[in-house]
Length: 425
Image (cartoon, rainbow, N blue to C red; front, top):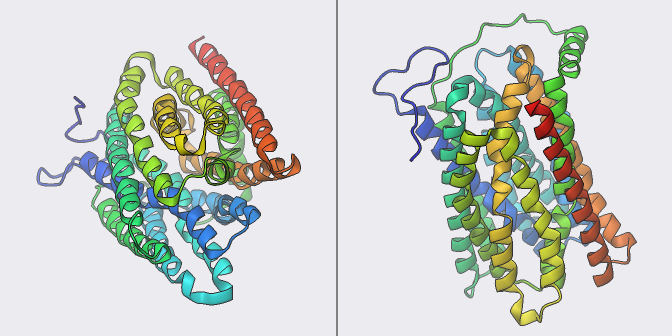
């Protein structure tokens, strides 16, 4: 049973009648998961329905992340200088809602639909990147360090419940005699509503005010902040291994979809149901990993995420060899069970980052880390598709690609284990 503190140690005490801000974090996370779940299964399928090519599918990760890259550092600098760390997350959510309204209108735009899709994607997929970067600073300001594991566990459980329900409901709806493109449009409008509700919840979380920073900003000040991060051994021991971990993970994000559609022959409804069932494993694992954090620490729990990801290339290679009628159930069960520890990523990385980021430039440090992982997210899925294409874009190429992915993930697992020993010393 998770014990949630009645009030945080940061800032002034909240009035007794104020809704528990940590319950609000659970609601906020659930609403975030609703539209992230729709993104997870709908973006690629929606683009395919619009007539996108394999290379354009590979760009679905790249385009919105490039847009986010251009704004991450400026927003990090701005956030460090605002009275409230809540301001930028709120604005980000409003932009996300607007993007989903545009996305719903894309099929009616004729020959411009692919271009309009990518423009809307900048807000619906790039906006959450900016939100998550600044949310970490916001979370660090509101929640004291002793309570972060409990609050993140509660929030992640709420997210996984929505992660289970959303794709399953959508999959059941789409399995009937419906116009799938029309259903995607309705899903996107629902996401716009969820983003606005999330903004309302975030605005209701009491946030301590900071001391107002000076109005001017200099390049020298930015250089000093970067120098402080580069001179922090704790920050570098986190930054390098975790960025490499993200790169090995992002390598097959587009290829995972191509493998499901072209080689496992999963239908749209099967893919949405798979997304929901997969989160059952995450929900079951989060309690175990939360206890591991309490007992072993976040640094020694994070490698479980890398270990779970190592199973994915093996499962894809195995299930693609099965008869077409027998692929869905083994694939779903194996990924749900063996990759359940992946939830350690969201549980551990936020806590470690908030611990190692220099306090004087926390927002900038978080933005720099997010900028780097966003840059790799721009490149790695596209490079993965290019590797597959260069190898021949056939079944043999899929096998070779997954072997390369497995080797890269085993390497990052070794680095995270080495980091555990170094941090312990």
